[in-house]
Length: 150
Image (cartoon, rainbow, N blue to C red; front, side, top):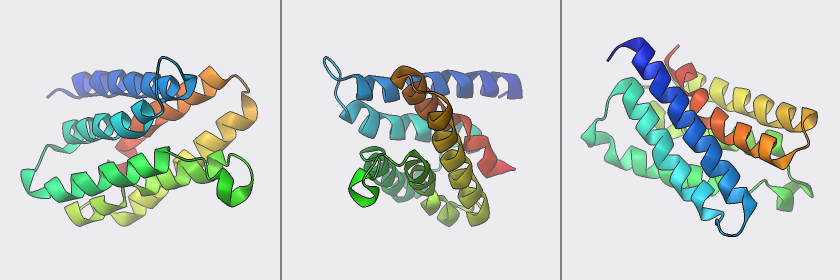
């Protein structure tokens, strides 16, 4: 597939992820599970677009889905006493760690996790509108995937 088409699809999937993230934070008629459990498969679809789907890695994909869903379900306020977007972004990025079993370099997974931490934490320090913050956090989950292939 041509690189410009892939880039366009990645941007579209990033927008979908941003919308789902925001929808999960709105409340009625939406539910938080929309963010927690639908964004992970959208992320996996984007990943498959970038590297191709390998059926022998089904168990890795399943683990990532679970780890990412769990990471998206909290902002670690129980741990820190406040919503810590820096740490939440980092953990969301680390949810992709099982990809090292599929040949992705672990240090690139760590770099992406750090980038997500800085993006999420920094963005939320700058902006105070919930819809801007939430859309961006969801958007960045997929928009940062190319870091894994540098």
